[in-house]
Image (cartoon, rainbow over all chains, first blue to last red; front, side, top):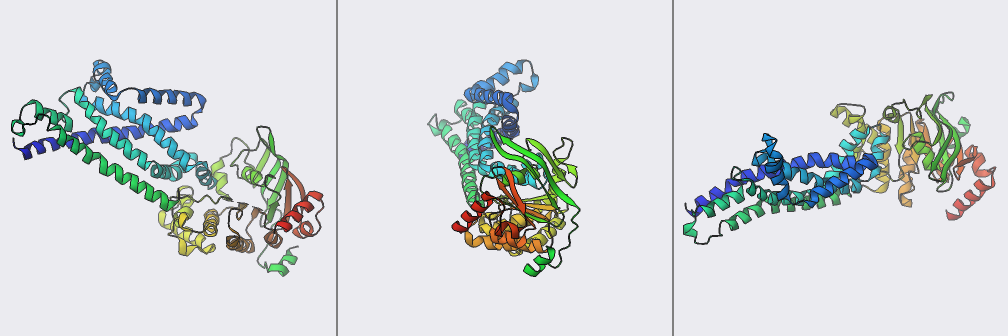
Length: 223
Length: 264
């Protein structure tokens, strides 16, 4: 295997890494927004429950969450006995706890007056949220969501521990090392470095773009 | 009285069906914690009428307007729109609010939408008009406040006065039965107040029903059918602008007017 072939072998892992990260990210958004709303509008009891839930998930190492889904709960539920599913669930559910916080901050940034102005036109609370609050929330949250996405891509590497069925970038790098296909590179740790560069390429540009886009948009709209 | 107005500013087309009460507050109380913001306030505005709420800051002008639009629920008392009780728990408040336009002191345009989008939003998603029709109607409303040239600008790109005119267009476009103005020029620099007041005078000429909280004396004199003077959450005095400005019945109104004039 020459160097180019090895690189191609690594790059084939990008689609796996991205699909785990992106699906987990959207799972995080899909749980984060309801969590935020529940904490904001659900009353004292829900506020406490959601707060506890968020603290718990943010306090546990992601690897433990993945192992818990895969080996723990997975014993009872065959559906989870799949590194893909376990990794996405663990990453997504934890991201929900983080995104809930990002969105809560963003909603505070939008402020209650925008909701009131929308309600004054006769919009229901739901419509006002959908058409007035939510779009502005995403603009304010864009930088935070960008760094959350970057964390997600990097943490998806922990799925490595769930076994070889999931051929993401890091797993492929490890295969290159372990199978000695690298003899000609002479540096046993070398495949991890291109792998690291691939992770940077997957995270840095998008996170930076979102950050800049958000600042520009906020300045233009005065929010 | 109508005749006197005609002479003053030429309100020719004004024709009032004085019998039709559009909005009414009946013995409304508002309490926050231990503070009484409104104390037994009753008022009504009939079709084609323009009433001005006058009084010092914190006298309850904003609060009564918000209660009338049910943006805050009164602690006690009733609010009626065309005889329908809005304070009743069975009422569809979103439906009722369509008929009540509201113009805010802090303007509160939707930051993420252009001027046209701000005006069209309610038309699209409340009245359910198709996109094209909503846009046309929005442009018509923007023309009415002479902001059609700025339709494609975001609020942050407009001056305060322009923003407030878009705010008025946003309320107008829904074709409300009454427009409530909550100190529409208080947040504006002095040189920008004029364009907003002019826009409101135009609406007055067209016979719009309006209830306006303001500190603008000259404007009130020109457009108001009745002045309602509030202080510490109570209606202290009510009367024609002529009577109110030249010969107020209460000491408090007199003192307040003197202060306003002193401060210019």
